[in-house]
Amino acid sequence: MSTAVPSLSLLDLAQVRREASTGEALAESVTLAQKADELDVFERLWFAEHHNMKRIASAATSVLIGHVAARTERIRVGSGGVMLPNHAPLVIAEQFGTLAELHPGRIDLGLGRAPGTDPATMRALRFDPRAADSFPQDVRELQGYLSGETLIEGIHAYPGRGTNVPLYILGSSLFGARLAAAYGLPYAFASHFAPDALEAAVRTYRSEFTPSEQLQRPHVIAALNVVAADEVAEAQRAADEVLRARVRMLAGRVGSGPLDDATVDGLMDSAVGQQARHMLSHTVVGDRAAVAEGLADFARLADTDELMVTNPAADLATRMRTLEILAETRRAA
Image (tube, rainbow, N blue to C red):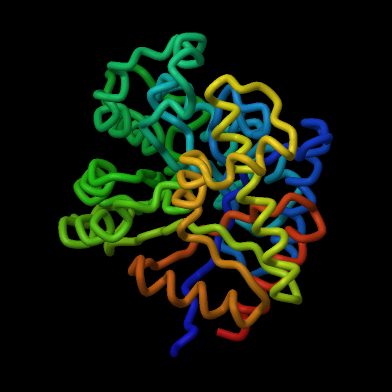
């Protein structure tokens, strides 16, 4: 069996560990970014916009991107993604235009159309549910600001104009695949937590792709989770903790409040536990050999040009070693 691996990138969820502070989580994100930069095999590092989630520290996505880009040298840094309906396209163009001027050639702008949160938080964000309907037009407006060919006469993004920050469409359905194909943009599929439509979406994107000034050939990014260690048993223990954390998060969303370990134990075989396992369907666990094989298998399944790896283990040491094992795998490919 071939173990060829396409290019590797990283999605950092800026997770706040239990008993840790947000400041500690952000410091860990910087440490991981610097390690990834040093290893020199990862194409890009993305952060995602989430709101009202206690265990994720990347709500102010552009601020975090700037902080990390200033503390790394080579790796591209961007959003995976900015939820565009939460924002005016002009504001995002100004934010990412500023980042591009500060860090030329290193900034990516991945875009999603979901709010990235729950209905109550949507209201707090002043999010209009109808805003998602204008996502295709908002992407075009944003493109105009960044290219210097504004669609709104007399309105320009300063900074932003002429920076041509590359855009990526994120999704977990055929809608995003078709939009990315129609606009000739790279397409990133969120298979690290939404596995169901992966193969259909990639087929649709590739078959309907239209070349653009940004991109002449289709480019697929598919996300998966990786938990790696020197010993398989060690990696499995860390992966079990990842599953428990996902169960804890899902159960917490329905108003159960803080969950002790015994309660989580009882949920593992419930519908919540089944949902968590399904969300983590595309997860590679093991030592270097298992990771190499798992990455290759997933790359073939997803027909992808680039793998976007999330590194969800609870402790920093395991996440650092996972990066090293991924780098070893890439160099050996």
